[in-house]
Length: 238
Image (cartoon, rainbow, N blue to C red; front, top):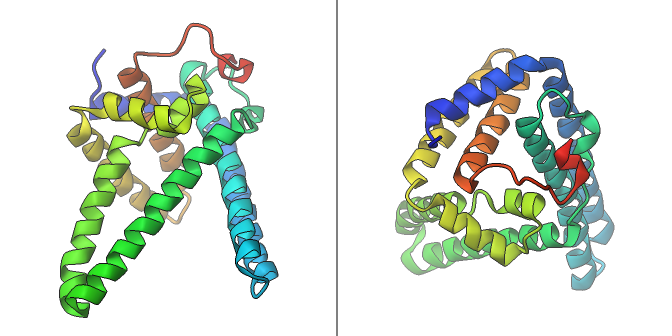
């Protein structure tokens, strides 16, 4: 079965309909967990402000570590829900393995984001405010989109196949080769669907977000060749 935008969306919607309250509950827990992480991040910023560069770096690492745990849980749940929608449980959201590999990937992505920000500052400083913004913002957006599309499945590969961060990025690059326009179309369509979900008195996001996650997971499964026959972790075998 080949990957297509329509098949990914259909899979996401049909899977959501099988256990809607499970997916709504999982999404609510994810929102709460992310809120706790954001609160902890702001708290660490206040705690370490003025305490020196080393403490500031420590606070950032704490935030990245907590964010990685949440993201790993979301990824593991999405994989289990895709493969076994009738048996997946909320408890799959707790999936701290392989933590250090996923944290390494998170740090790499964060460094890339910082590098992009610094590049923007260099462009604005070197070309002037108006010219720098006119050239720099579109350039950074294009580069950011290309980077995101190439490595969109890196997190899935770390959790699903226990790959290291660099190998996961290489594998994601190979998987997405020739499919970037299709993936871009899928992500743009999912973005519009989630915007509509927010506009529908916010309630719609509780449907559109799980459907979107399942659609992206379906794209990963199709492009990666399907689920492994012997998952490395029992929680993914459900």
